[in-house]
Structures are given as C-alpha cells and as structure tokens.
Image 1 (cartoon, helix red, strand yellow):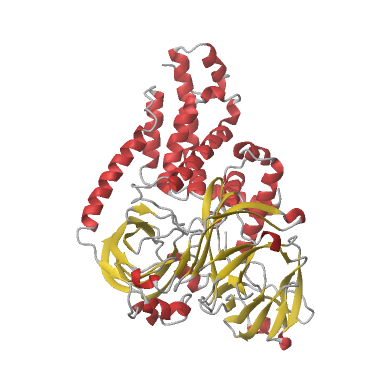
Image 2 (cartoon, rainbow over the protein chains, first blue to last red):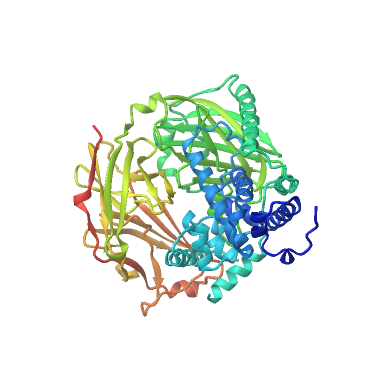
Length: 184
Length: 456
C-alpha cells in the first residue's frame, strides 16, 4: 500500500481509478476518501442532526452517507468539491431516514433523542435548532459550513434565489431571537 | 455578506459540535474498514441495531408490563396545581381534575428520579404531571438574563411516547411547563398533542434520554383507560382531501391538504391537517356553524418536501355544542402597517383588518412587566398579537424586553406580556405613552375553497 502524505500530489485520483483499478490506486482512493471523511465527520453529524433532530438517526445518516459516498466516489468530478458532494449525499440519506421514521412502525425507539437540548456553550446552535427545518439547513450550511449561496443551492438542489430567500428569512429570525433576549 | 453574517460565522466557528459518546470511534471503525477494503454490507449495522434494540424492547416490555398499572381517567385533585404562581395551563385545571388518574410510578437514572404523579388523557392530548428529584442542585437551562418561566420551560422534561409499543410522532409544538419546589425538586407537566386516534384502552410508555443535558435512560409504562372521557369528546376523522389557496400576489400559496381529524375534547379542540411540501397550510380562519370565528392558537409546525406530515392546530371554543366547523383560507398579500394607540385610550377595540379586531380588555404595567388581556373578534391572521411601546412622539421605544403570549384554553382570552429587562428603569417606563400594533391590508377569506366538517 502506498502512503499518501499530500493529497494534492495525487492528482485526479478518480480519473486514475476509472482507468486502472490497481491495488495501489484503490489504496489512494481509500486514503483520500477516509481522510476527508475524518475531516468532515463532525460537520456531517451536525448537518444530519439539524434535519433529524436526534443523535441516533443523525449517526445512522452519517454512516449510510459514508457507505453511499464510497460507492459513488467515481461520480465526484472535482476533488475540491468533496465537502458539498458528500453533504448532498448526507442530506438525501437524512431525508430517507426521516421518511422511514414516518412510515415504519418503530420497535427500536427506546433511545430516541429528539428533544432540543439547550446547551449553555452553544448559544447559536440553540437558536438554530429553533428554526423551521428549511431555514435550519441553509443556516447550518451557510454559517457553520461556510458554503456559498451557489454551493448551498447545489447541495440542496435548490435555485440560488430560493436559497437567498430562505437565508434572508433565517437571518431575520435569528435577529429576532437575538432581539428577544438571545445572546451570542 | 454583512457584519451580522460575519459575527454569526465567527461564533459558529467557535462552537463545539456535540456528538454522542462513541461517535468518533464508530465512524473511525467504518473508515478503517473501508481503508482495508472490507466494506460492510449495507444495512448490516442497522440490522444489528434493530436486533439489539428489539431484544432491548422485549426485555423492557417484560419489565415494564409485568404488572402494568391501570390509569383510569376519573375525578381527582392534581398536586401540580398547587403551583405558587400562575402557569400556562391553569385555565384547564377543572378539566384536568375531572378526568385524570393518580399514578405514582417512578424511575431513576444518573441521580435524577422522576415520579409520574398524574396523567390525564383524552382523544387529543396526553397530559403528564410529574415530580423530578435530583441528587444535585438543579441547574436551569438558559442564561440568567432570560425570564425564569422560559428557563423553567426549557428545563422541563421533553417526554417521548409510545402507545401499544408504537412510537407516536410528536406534533410540531412542544408544550411544557414547570416550577421549582426547592433547589432539588421540580414539578412539571407536558401536554402532548395526539394526531391519530388512540384506543380507549392502551399501554402508554413515556421515556426520555436527556434531562438538563444529562444523558440517561428514564422510562415508565402505564395502562391507560380513557373510556370515561369519550362521553365528553366528539372526534371525527373526515379524511377530506382539498386544494386550497391562501394569499395573493407574491404571497400566493397553494396547498393539497387532507383534513385528517377534527375533535372537540375536554383538554383542547384540535384540527389535524396532513400535507406534503416545504410550506404547510397555516393561514386559515375557523368558523363554527353559528358564524363565530374561533381563535386558532399559533404554534410551530413541521413540514417535509417529499412526504406527508401531520400538523396539529388547536382552536378554542367556549361552547362544546358545535355541529360543524369551517376552515377558510385567508387571502392576504402579506402587507401590513404599524398603527398606534395611546395609553390613555386603552382599553379599546383595535380593528386590524376589514373582518376582525383585537379587543384589549385590560392593561396593567409595573416595574417588572406590562400585561394586556386581549380577545379576538372576527377573523384575524393566525399569529401572536404584539404590542410595541412608543413614546410621546409615537416613536418606538427600544427597551431590553421579552415578549410572551399565553392563551386561556377555555375562553380564548390572550395574555400578552412584555417582561422588562433588568436594565429598564422607571424613567424608561414613564416614557411609554402608547403602543404600536400591526394591521393587515387586503385581508379577505377565500370562501370558494372553504371546507366544512360536520361534527354530528
């Protein structure tokens, strides 16, 4: 197995892999993929939690997204887009789990943790948790993940105008909460 | 990007991401497996979790239902109502005490003991009254600058429920209240809206995994018999599908809704609407068969772009003798304007559109708060009524303050409160000479798409 110290030196790993699946190149792929996942796993959890509102489902969504992303790594055209690309997969997985929870008779809900936990050292997150889901997701992507409006549109599959509008409304709601006694 | 965005982004960067215990290790194991090219079969982990959870459930079920206590709804006092001050659901005390059961079962974890004191269940709401005892002094959630009643509400338990082993999806609104008996004891209640129809007799499980940010396992089970309440309830499941339009201009919003449930019951009247989409139908008025417009309590709701989601709307009617209700979409272009009213002219009726008004019945102001008792007359938007202090020049006064709105669930009166912050002085309050309030333009009801539900 080769050791990858600087991923930028690897070049377009995906293209390489498509052409020749040698064991070394698979190792490169794995290393590249896993180091990115390790870097973003916490961000992924936060995004999933913003949609699903409970820890167990959010962790399941992250796990499923990792498996799915690994399978689909060949569809990633630009290595710099790894973060928005895996976030989009994660959002799809989160919605799937959300749907399962609505349609299936649950036997395993003893550990469900859906309540909004107010945390003293997370004043902003406490406010974000109170937003409606459509505003919450854009807020997390914009303020926490630092994605551009266009990037958010790509992740959520929404026109940039819609993203702008939601972000603007989310911003107003945050301001309103701050005016009503919140502090950050 | 403005300064506000920069401030929020810097704050976001500093906030730690809280993950469940073992999360990092589990994800690292997955990536390690992938690195070694030993990818697990999809679903394996979920299956394992399911099997493990099912075993846990079976064990729990055996333990919990070995001798399930029967909670039959009957008349009896509820200790919670010995609260030292007013609280949110006082208006329902008589109804709760008419139909409830004293329970007395407990569970304990992480030094926190919960005793389920009483439970009151009807077709629309499960109300639980409990006592929390902690080995350590209770640390309320939220900053000290926030009103105590908010911090108590945030700190009260948020129970999840199952009926006959089936998880009940919670409604969008979280309704709970609490007060401290002493530094180690809290008494609380939670009101959970039920969007489906439950059997008159069912096994109810209440559980939570977090209390005051402390992770643990608290679980209680009780067998509920609500047959005695059924006599005082009127529930229909009409399953009416309809296309409705609310608003016009840029505010136009089209919806395909299903009227799933309409119910009049002792603990609160309820309409359940089911809909798929990012924005659900919330702009409607409710009128009874006598032509009275009924107050709909604004609440948070849930939505999903791909799947149908149920939302519960509570409406207030002093009379339970209603033959039908009509849901009428509100047409409004969303434009509104601030009007003002002088303190000297209060109490007064404030028209807010061509079809409805708010009547301010009384207003009191002291160094702690301003409190107005308000009543809806006619059709108004489903949103909280707000009063904003103004000075003698009719300019808004910016005070450090917190707004709160409570609804008397029996008579529909609305208690609008502004809590003054600590930095607000008597001189500041003396400057208040009146209030601003919002009025709507082009407010009409879309009678062509009104939906009438027969309750007979």
